[in-house]
Length: 144
Image (cartoon, rainbow, N blue to C red; front, top):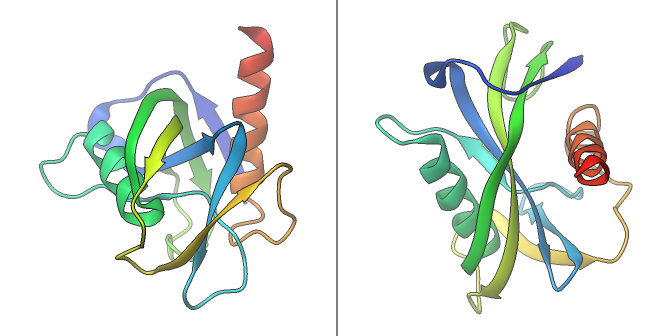
């Protein structure tokens, strides 16, 4: 598994949006109903949807976020077979950061619940991908 980072790629290559998010300075993670691990919100781009619309939709669906500020960080790609890429070819997504101000009282998605962490969890759903995305976000925060 290899994760790469880019400033930009052709928009039509962007298939996924992943949203690193915080609420009151705490990391926001989701727990899927069928897993005992944690993940940052994200998902597939729908037809005729901008990648920003994908990010907003996935953030709202998976965390119940009602009010938030969201911005792109960078493009990422993953090379290698995984749960969402059976061929292993390079797939591209946009990494976002969101500051969530308010949540719905309950979730209406495949997510069982949302957790707020002071420190990053160790039980990742995608341990070869998502920690690297957060590392890149943190690296870029230090250079700003």
